[in-house]
Length: 81
Image: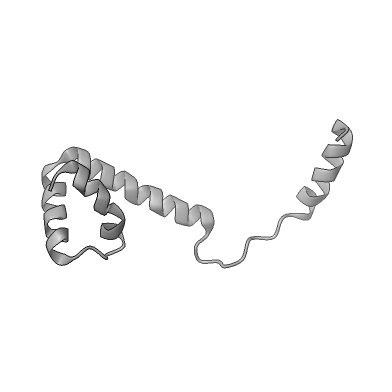
């Protein structure tokens, strides 16, 4: 497997959907190539950060604080909009 090929399989690898044979080649390449290993780690961190940012565990958006709701129109009035 080449570095460019590895990038095509990142999502399937992380989600556990990569076929066994391809996964084996993928992991062999990761073990030999520092750049791809580093890229993989960054990819996993980005996915985790996105899940945290979007609060994947919740189907609802968090309620906006009342102070913020009131502050938006007040700020618009002050700026003449």
